[in-house]
Length: 198
Image (cartoon, rainbow, N blue to C red):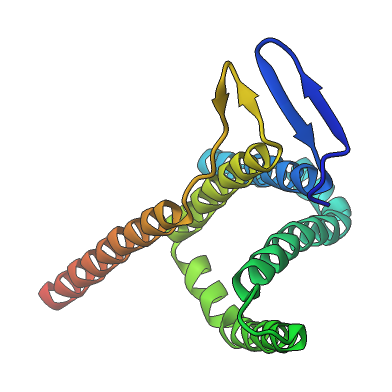
């Protein structure tokens, strides 16, 4: 998957296309498209027109299944590659790394199952969190596209595409969440004060 199956060179661009690069690139484009579309629909308050609602109902199940499948493939692929990279060389016995990865996946699935409903309810109660989450997906989409360019050893006008350090991404997400939670807390306190004054 990592080995390029097609290499291209010209005066201003060079690189090699691999299966891994294609999956990350298409996954990044998909996240950018879906997140941007969802943000636009939420901002424009679409979906209240009866024709749109009927059309959405007829195609929503198929689309939902396809979208969930695509997102699962992209994130599973990226997670597996990350897990392999992180467990590479931790033990001379390769089965130890495999057992560690299996245990980690099982624990993460259990955690996701436990927190899926409470997190979903919280996000549905706070539309600003929905927009923030969609914005994070845009960031992740850009990161996947940049990672794809890096894995393809893409060089444009003599500049090689590098990766975006994940620490930058995690910091920006954590900082945005912290600001949003402060804002939610402030709104909650303001609402409590108004109720007391009444």
